[in-house]
Length: 446
Image (cartoon, rainbow, N blue to C red; front, top):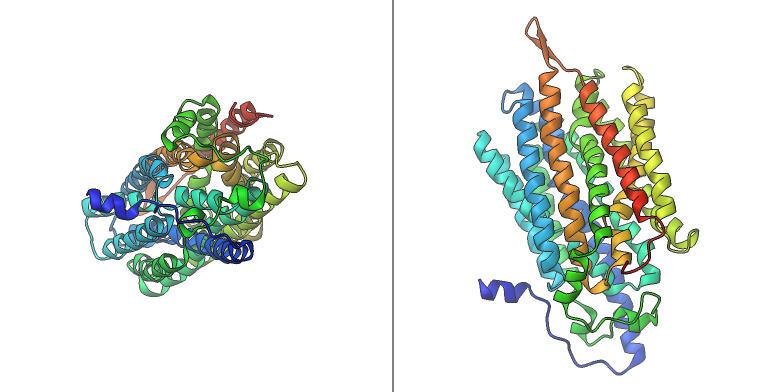
């Protein structure tokens, strides 16, 4: 076990390279390659996490699982994911990101391949729990790597672009996986993402990188001469992580993110099912409407960083408020649109995607990362991630129960009422907005 931890740990600092031109050449090549593969890799993490969301209806129709069992399995993944994010976030501050992240995606892919080969609730639950643990390693290492290779004044824009990667994964899942499932059956909804992610994991192992100092490069703060967040801390990683754990604002932001994730994962997990059962669309129609969600989510994430950096002087609270209002409004619109208006449903999902894209940037990391020591970015993501996915997991099983209890059977045909579930989801978005206001105008290390 000690050898395994040593293999995953960040390497020792190499002797500094003295030639400034060589430093610049190596630094620029590596950091842009790192950012590209963080975006691609993190996007593909989502294809192995959301595959169950697309396969729900076919699995239900074949009697493989009930709605309540699907809710339980989804919740198991997210609860494991929540605690995994906390634990692995703290490890990420000490890890070789190249090895840590690529191996995690590879193992998640294996879990998906096995999931498509079994036909038992308990095996499903066990494999999806393992998948949740491997999936939990995707986010924090990405943020740690961004903080290692991009300085404070650059971070908002790059973070926003990276955070949009989950929308790429969602789009591939909601459209690509849906087409595969529709053509070849629910099992291929797990096998296809698994095969793709094995290939991507290998490419990540080749292209990601450890800290700059392990290649003889200076810290990014010194390289860019960007001391806007202070000089690099000489404190130990443990002491910086304790600052994070003791910070009340991190916990408040964690609770806000938890409520936002209840709404976000309600749509991730149940929107396709709702469009089919509640509004009468076919799977491909429902998937096409859902495609707007990740596409506009990507735009929301990218614009969030650019807007906060360039229009609000790297302040995150004002745009976070605007995104929060849009989140609640779009969720209400999605609920109140009557069946048969596919275009309006698509617009509502696009608005919701744009809002969540920005809020995942702000509430799920960037606000707290800006406020805490940069050397503990993994710990920040770990704490926020624990709250976020505890909220997402709690939503999944509560939503499953609320939807299952609303079921009525007439002539052997089941119908579902989603009213109570939507009241729950909309209420969570309102609470998230109110909690986020507590972080208004906070400054670093408050």
